[in-house]
Picture (cartoon, rainbow, N blue to C red):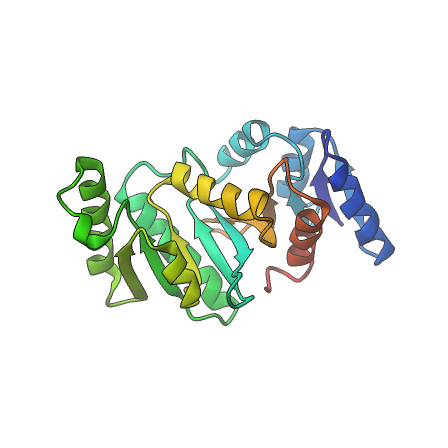
Amino acid sequence: MIAIGYRGNEEVLRAVNKLREEGVEVEVVKNAKDLVDGLFNKKYLGAIRGSLPSSEVIPLIRKRINFYRASILKNPFSNDIFLLSPVGIDEVKNIEDKINIIKYGAKFLESNNIKPKIALLSGGRLEDLGRDERVDKSIKEAELMKNRLKDFYNIEHRGIVIEEYLKENFNFIVAMDGITGNLIFRCLALVCNLEGYGAILLSKKPINYIDTSRNANWKRYYNAAKLLINKFRV
């Protein structure tokens, strides 16, 4: 059985009804602690945040494991999936956090027989170096990350040009920070309605949990459940 959190978004119930019609066992959970306890106590094979507040669910999970979040979306140019991370507004404190995100995200892709093709975003085009102190810092940081990891991964840094990365079917977009990643996710998924599966947790220890926006439509909750049922095979 899988669990899905519910509070105030009827799209969750629409997804639940669709899943039950297909024979999937789903329990609707209205309390964040019950959802997290049930996941870690093995009551549920997997859990989806659904429409429960992130501010309630995420701290409870973080007490048990350290993790980052990566949204899974469909590339509008190729229809293949790609990861977008970080998307948690408070999950990246330094460059080492972003290095960990890349390592854990690449491992997830490889476990699904997908060869990682990693794109680093920064605050401007590379030729914009010198125009703004914040932009300069982001470009230099991305270059440092690329140089540290280029012997291990197919990784590129071209600056701010996310459209180029997606047109060339990069499957792992690494944003400058969690706020930037969250804004990109909201623009692509919640404004432009790009199809997605929610956000997986990237950590040393795999966990059958998918984070979803409170404002998602039923298809996104449905897709998240399907991803759990298929044991994260995309």
